[in-house]
Each structure stands twice: as structure tokens, then as C-alpha cells.
Length: 185
Image (tube, rainbow, N blue to C red):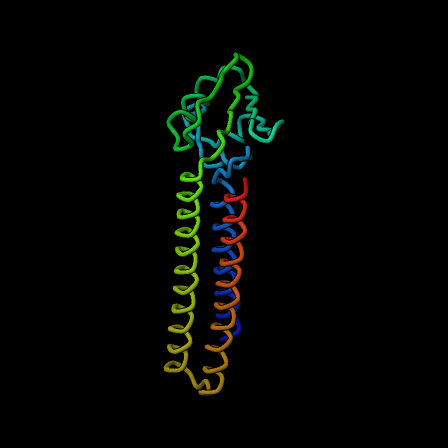
């Protein structure tokens, strides 16, 4: 019973880490990376779809992204979506492909980006702690509802705490890695 609770909590913690990694991957670090466009959606036959589902995105050079739509008539829509996004990059459309030149990051931009990375990491830590609190509340509820021993409850809470500490360390490591990537010129 407690083991199920712990494994469900660990699954949620893994998802939190996965979400953090995906979010950080979309942040530009002065290098062109196709994942930068993952959050941008384009209107395609009446519904909103991610750019990577209607085109091929590649990074032929360190600071250049090349977007080749599978249908030429989507070029203008893709261009509009990029302009509306928070990327801050002007697309260059030559009629067959869209080129995005990723600008070099200034020192100030890098520092601001690091702040955003740290904030995102902190939000992930809050989510992990919330999962821990939820699990501990459920363990305490089990104590009231059934005849689980105090020792089992203590072991369960200790196990949840160990997992929490491990995932928070993982978040710190991921944030630190991204910080180094952004600050390296």
C-alpha cells in the first residue's frame, strides 16, 4: 500500500524532471537548436499544430535554423507564428524555406536567461516538494484508516524524503548545466 504510494509519487517526480528538461531545451543559448521552436504552433487546416509536425527543422550551422515546410502554402503561416512568438528572431522567407539566424547573446541577455532558468528550476523544486507533501498526507491518512504500524509510516515518510532529496539534487544539476551552457561564449 505504502509502496504503491511511493512509486506513484516517484512517477510524478520523474514527470516533473521531464517537463523541466523540455522547458529548458526550448530556451535559446546562442546556438541554434530545433527544440527552440517546439512551443510555437501554426494554424494548419483550422487547428493549431506545432511547427515540427508540418515541416522539417534542421540546424545546418551553429547559429542557423532551417525550416522546410512539407507544403509550400504553409510558409506564410509559419512565418507569422514565429513573428508572434517570444523568440525575438525575424524569419527570412525565400519562398521555399524559412531561415532563422539566432543572434549572439549579449552578457545582459545571458544573465537574464540564467535568471529565467533558475526560476524554472525553483518552480520544479516546488512541484517536487508538493508531491512529497501530498504523499506524506496520504501516508498519514492510511494510518487513520488502517492498522499500519508507526514504523511502516516512518519508513514510508523517510523513503519519500530520500526520493525528494534525490530529485531536487537532479534539478540543481540540470539547472547548473543549462547555466554553464548559457554563460559559455
